[in-house]
Image (cartoon, rainbow, N blue to C red; front, side):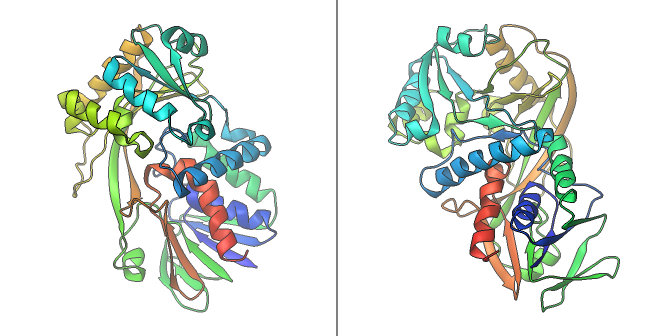
Amino acid sequence: MRVIVVGAGVVGTMHAWHAVERGHEVVQIERETEARGASLRNFGQIWVSGRAGGEELETALRARELWESIGERVPGLGFRANGSLTPVRNDLELAVAEAAVARPDAAARGYKLVTAAEARRINPVLRGGFAAALWCERDAAVEPRPSQLALKNALLASRRYTYLGGREVRDVLGEGSVRDDHGEVHTGDAIVLCTGASLSGLVRELAPGLPVRRVRLQMMQTDPLGEQLTTSIADADSFRYYPAYASDALDALNAGQAQPPTAAAHKMQLLMVQRRDGGLTIGDTHEYEHPFAFDTLEDPYEHLAEVVESFLGRPLPKIRRRWAGVYAQCTDKSRVVHREQVRDRVWLVTGPGGRGMTCSPAIAETTANELGW
């Protein structure tokens, strides 16, 4: 079988990976020279802890297994089973963590409520003030910026994979063919469009009623911390954002403890992961209304720095980079991703939202299974 994958972000590349693994020939087409969208502009978190139950959690757990197995074969991914800690400061936040640990699927997620002293033994860098923490053993991390190149190089070594960068697919011609902006026609037994947040042009023509929206976020990265952050870190505002924490306790938190004005205005939470060079990737905000602003705002960065410093008990290293990213999110919250056959032999897979990095290997595996690869 010959598979054409359009888009070289993490979702597209994982589709290429599964096709090659099953013995097929793959041509992957990317409009940029290399991917540069949300697949690189993220935390690199394999985030099981906050996922909704049912299909979403099953997908995340399967993806966690796949990331680990792929990481063993592709060291450039930088896979590490680092887990996560979410420190809590007061009784309202603690009650949400306790409700999470009481969930029927808590063991599958690796949830455990730990004291502040236990949290510091797990992650000695947390010298600031907090009362307890929610530990999630199943969370993990990879390096988002080099991972796509590492996967591409592994695919090239198979000799069944061709990468065509700097080409934009403009037309679907039928009979399993697409034409790029160089005028070249590519024909396959299956074509999978993994266009990420690029939802206009060809995607709009093929799926005009697409139930997917775009979301913008701001993030930053620091100079090396100078010591090892052994886990990913979230704050209690992440309870408000992730569906796994829905409970009466969360309702009480929302009613009794407002977010700081900056965090509320920008729909913020703290997520933080240390990179292999020692720097910290920190975020994030959420913007849903179009058109998006073209500039980044300083207030969210100042808020994040204050929260991080309160957990670390030390000043944040110098901020090295600030950036904004845009990802595609399925508006049907019951679905992990939007997967639709849009023409004969042509499928569109988009909209995993903030779950893209976490769930992409399992999303692509499901596509491969459903298409009979």
